[in-house]
Image 1 (cartoon, rainbow, N blue to C red):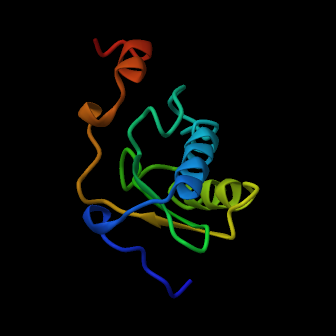
Image 2 (cartoon, rainbow, N blue to C red; image 1 turned 30 degrees about the vertical axis):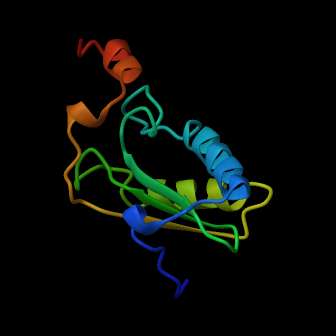
Length: 117
């Protein structure tokens, strides 16, 4: 896809895009790092979700480590699941390493489940 989403601080999302974004987040909560029993959203691996005016979804995500064994497959799995959401015209997942993931990015529920609280 040639189109880049605009920076997060300059976006205005319409109500339809917000509904699609909620559905994307719900789908992201069905994706798991196979080594950690918490979904990637609660784990804090999702840095940004944006739906543009053409109903294209842009997801920025990271992994717990660049050496993660699913580095080659998890972003594609995420992209495929998001692309299959009714109302999404296209999906792009960008794997980023900055800022690096840390335990502080996890939700409180994830930290409790994994015994970090």
